[in-house]
Length: 293
Image (cartoon, rainbow, N blue to C red; front, side):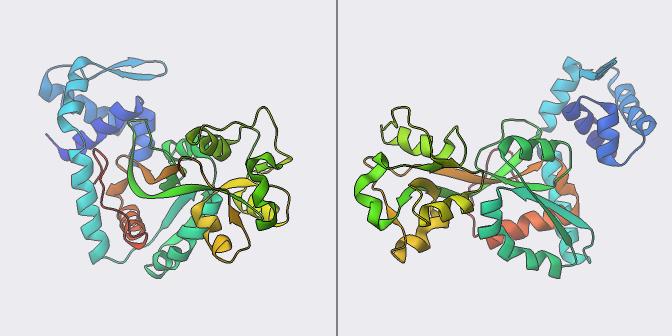
């Protein structure tokens, strides 16, 4: 079987659409249909049922996809990585993630990408929007504080952010009974910290909310109240006695941070190179998720 035909099959199976697979692979729809037809002729069985909204895999297609597993992705990623090391890179790498983490951890690494000949475009967003950007191929790599559940995405652990409750030293004695500020009205980080420590706000609402952790930090520094921040945003302030930690009765909870990409994307040398560079620069633990190259 042709590797090109197998790659086409994998993308049609993942996307459930010939047109989407064609767009992703840079092929025409007739070319994609031709690849699938060639495989079907070799197997003597249909692989997909055509519908108005796309294609539905047959049991034969599901068996073939399961047999291939992630082996094709890994082989293509390995080839792309070798090619990236031996050839002059060019093109654009699109990155996305939470603005705060990009600013604190990713931005210092980006000159190494531009020095290699790549251009970089950056977008910010929350978990839902980041996954949507990856699946629509609007971005190549993204950082999230969650592990993707969609089988079309793959990821690698790049670290853990520890959540710390902080306030002004002069307000430390009041603890969480003082006014507080939050990322939004759902209190994502605060709620996680409270749950880990068996605490409650008893229905109290934040005196201010803003979807930017850097602004939250500034609000706390100005005396607006306490909040919960990732350790990388407040460690320096705590060491300088500008902020004080509200002791966690039980634990300081943490979030795993992951670099995420669409399966199959690593066949492009620029993306494979950018991924490898980011993992090395962030000094990541070599803990590979299932199926990760």
